[in-house]
Length: 209
Figure 1: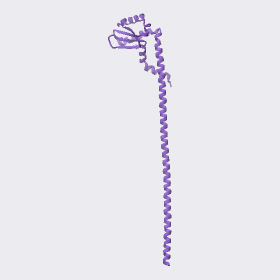
Figure 2: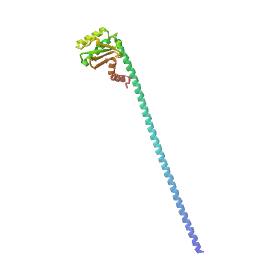
Figure 3: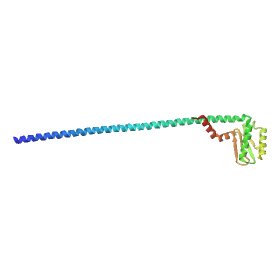
């Protein structure tokens, strides 16, 4: 009986140790589980922060692009508006310039245009082209005066070489006799030569900051 008592005692000890071991195992398992949960929670927080950060970054990038495109569009519209205004002003200048043909100073301007052209061309025989709408203005007296002016400069200008053609647009065109050389001193040509300078002046006046 004592023998069995010892065995029972041993079994009791073993069971107690087993329970202790199980308790420790359960405790370790629980600790491990809690650790895993905390780690998962930390990783979840980190992921959320990363996702929020990326979303904010993308949001900021979208905002930058939207405002950048908006500024570009505003500048484009502003430039188009400026160009429209410049065109309108330029057309007004062209109209005003054509109206000069109705003024008394137009004949003096024709003489000035001729002198400028012959000084640049430095040729001895020329032809003149006028707009056909100037026939009443460039009459026989004006033509004779132009011929005399050329004679003084030792430049040959025959009456037969003074012609009126469509679309000259006021002013005159000087052609060198028997040469493919002209000096276009029509009103439209002079305006075209001044276009860049005039456009700059228009911009400066219309869009002062």
